[in-house]
Length: 93
Image (spheres, rainbow, N blue to C red):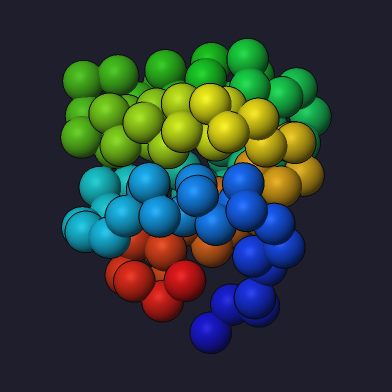
């Protein structure tokens, strides 16, 4: 199981808003998005997500990015959420 990272209310709200359900993306998608987030922030991550346009994964990943941005998560906090996204979607967070 992934490490516990709910350190503040913003992350907890993001996790709650993301919710559970089927993940329509792969671990490689998540790794690419996380790397882009850490290197270039939300703009870079959205650009990376755009590579998946036309797929359910794109819609799901863009939704997650929008939720994190709405709650003003830092790059690092957003990367942690992305790192545990499968656990979140499975209801283990």
